[in-house]
Image 1: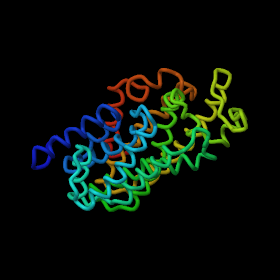
Image 2 (image 1 turned 90 degrees about the vertical axis):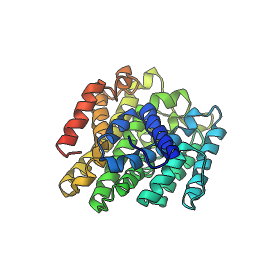
Image 3 (image 1 turned 90 degrees about the horizontal axis):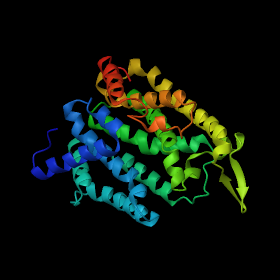
Amino acid sequence: MNGGGSSSLRSALSYCVQQVRNYDYHHYLCLLELPTEMRKAAFALRAFNVETARAMDVASDPKIGLMRLLWWQEAIDKLYTKKPINHPAAQALSWAISEHNISKPWLKRSVDARIRDAQREVDDIPESIAELEKYAEDTVSTLLYNTLQAGGTGSTTADHAASHIGKASGLVLLLKSLPYHCTRNRHQSYIPADLAEKHGLLVKQGGRLEILLDNDSREGLSNVVFEIASVANAHLLKARELAGKVPAEAKPVLLHSVPVQVLLDSLNKVQFDVFDPRIQRGVLGVPPLLFQFKLKWYSWRAMF
C-alpha cells in the first residue's frame, strides 16, 4: 500500500496495516476491497481500534490497560490540536484526520466506551442485550461512520446501515470472544443478566449475583448465545433492507457485514456452542480461501 509523502508516514501506515493483519485478520481482508484513496485512512482507523480493543488484553495488570486507554483518550485531543505524538498508529490517525476531516466525537465515543467497560467491576453484569448493543454501536458502528466519512460519502442511509452492521458485528465478536474472557474472569461483562436468569445461568453467591459457566450450564449458555446471535442477525437483515438506497461508493465499507454473516453461519453449525473449537479455526470458523471467496463475491455483486 502506498503511504503518504514522508518516510515516517509510510512507516506509520505500514505499522497500521501489519497491526490489523495480525490482530483483526477478517477486517484486514475487508479493507483490501476498499478503493485505494480510502484504504490508507481506513487502515489508520482500524489500527486505532486494534490498539484500544487490545489495551486490556495485553496488559498484565488491568490498571496498566486502563492507563493505555486514558492515554488514547488524551491523544485524540492532542491530534486535533496538531500536537505531534510519537506512536505510529497515532501518527497515521493524525494524517487521516487532517486529510479526510475525520470526526472527533466518534473517535472519542469509541475510547470512552472502552474506558467505561474497563472500569466495570467483575460482578457488574449488563441488564439486557440493549447494553451490549450500545457498546457495539459506540465501538464498532462509530468506526464505520468514520470510514464512510473518509470516503466522502455523506449518506445518512449508509450511516444507518453502518449502525446496524456495527451492532451486529460487535455482538457476534463478543460471542466469539466469550471463551477467552472466561479465562480472564471477565465473562460476566458480556452475558446479560435477563438472559442468564431466563436460561438458568444466574446464581447468587456470597451475597452477589454471578453467572455460572460450567459443563452443566453448557446448554443454557448455547441458548443465550442463540438469542444474542438472533438479535445480531436482525440487525444484519435491517442493514441489507437499505442496500437499494445506499450509494455505490459506500458499499465497500459495508462489506464488514460479510464477517458477521460467516460467524453467524459458523455458530449455527456448532449449535451456538461458543466453546466448540471449530469456531476458532480458519477465519471465523471457515477456511481462509472460502472466506475470501465470499468477500469477493459480495464485493463483485456490490452487495453487503
